[in-house]
Image (cartoon, rainbow, N blue to C red; front, side):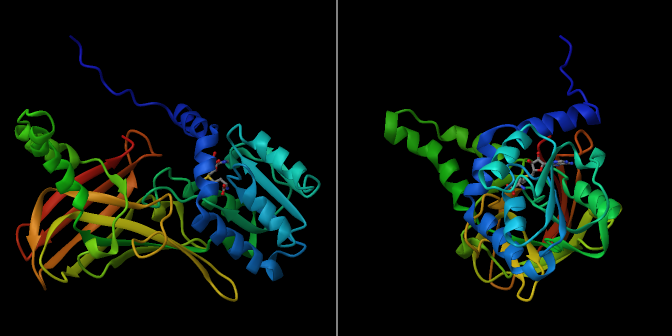
Length: 340
Ligand SMILES: C[S@@+](CC[C@H](N)C(=O)[O-])C[C@H]1O[C@@H](n2cnc3c(N)ncnc32)[C@H](O)[C@@H]1O
């Protein structure tokens, strides 16, 4: 029997599949309902009222249009709301419902092929995916910035930082231990499934999940930063950074958590923080599990490096390469995937 091989789709097919995901209401519902996300954008846009008043704004990936509405509320004279998925129709309805259809031009197109008359004073975009780079939407924002943003124009958000920390994750133990509890439930001994369960959980797939602050085993390390005013396509395609942690105390380490924050400039910066120490967002944290848990003690040193890049099969998907060593032991390498 012939092996089924994953067919590598061409870029157009991948993009239409990607925009199709944004044609459903549930993803927009999740984003708008994420009050940490939506209120951070709202506050950041309204606080930039002195820079937006009477100005022209480009909203890259406008979705249902809420950020464009905030821009008009902040005084923008004209907003180009560019949206490639079919929800652009809804954005148009939202503008009408809010009496903003004369100020906001909804453009149904990928930003890469949009026609914008002239340069803009500001760009706003919510482009961040899981682990910041999943979906690779930042490339579209950079494209728009280089083509349409006036020199010295405003870009919201203006920077992004990525963090990593070693973690304990109690769900690994509870899911593995579930198999030994089956005997109490139904009288059938299924403890032999535990090893398989552990290998499935601690796989090469990245897990989007929440980490409690008490399960972070050391101070986190900021391993890379992006300046949205100046970053290039090449720089953001491969993000890389190193880390060294000193553990707080005795614990079982299951892996690493990765998260990001973005900063909006203004008289007072607004920071949208997706860390385990901040209020929960729909991005949660991204977990990278080791193959086997490791016992760490107070002052155990964990060092290594991490790289993020688009997957070879689909550039919207994410590949992470992690090298790490615990207590000066053997250096280990693990590849992780999100999406493919
Ligand atoms: C994370 S959502 C944000 C939606 C909206 N701005 C909000 O804050 O609710 C990203 C949106 O950008 C759109 N998008 C992604 N890449 C795009 C591109 N190259 N051109 C136009 N729209 C794009 C997606 O279809 C999606 O609706």
